[in-house]
Image 1: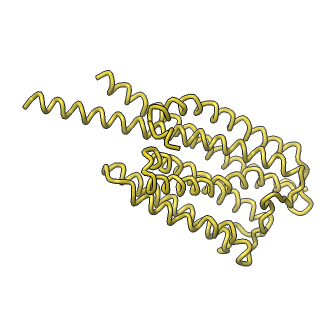
Image 2: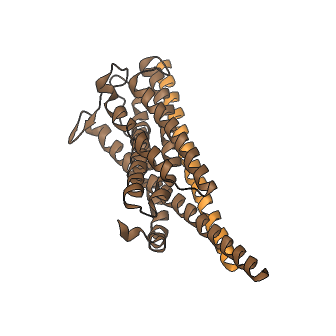
Image 3: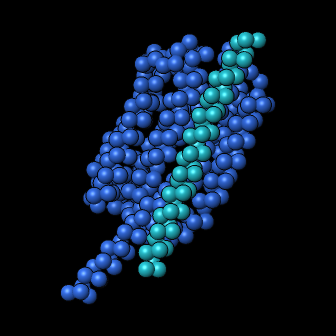
Length: 46
Length: 244
């Protein structure tokens, strides 16, 4: 029983790292894209 | 390939593809991971920790796939002078490094309950760590070249030379004694039971779509920055000329 509980902790840790890393990558890339495209539009209007 | 050399044409396709790739990638990968978490039985030897397979293997595939993309784009830049190749290579570097770090972290977490250790300096783990450092080097080099406005040819050569590490990673478990298991999936063959294989393949597809969406978003960001800089420079020159 103790061993099964420990194994799930390893599984959750691996999934948590993957989820956090993937979401951080997606959100940072999306925001960088939006910011850069907004800046390009502003330079066009100037 | 040169059909996409026109940034305007590329942007038209990229705008249409980015969001669907990101959303479908997120949905498919999360469904596959949930499938692996709730529907797959524990492994006879590894127990519940076998579920780490569904994030570790796609991350490993994308870490090597990311550098392969950099190498192909570098070749396209050096040989065919494709105008978007350097941008594609730069855009693939950060996602590739992220998935390499995820692969190393999840592998280490998986190693503790199955091997009894977080880390060993064997061929597979060391060559993956070398890949992470290659990514860091490439990101630093390509960013500094872009910031200084210099040619990206040095980064392209670095991308091609670094590709030597990809077959080393792939064959490391065959060439050297390792705690890491030998390849389970080879061309047309699999040693993995279908109950594990299907969610694994679907998770790999989902994370690959996500990777594609992230690369497109980063390419759009780099292109928009270049266009904004060029426009500002042109306007500054025009203002200077009108003053003179």
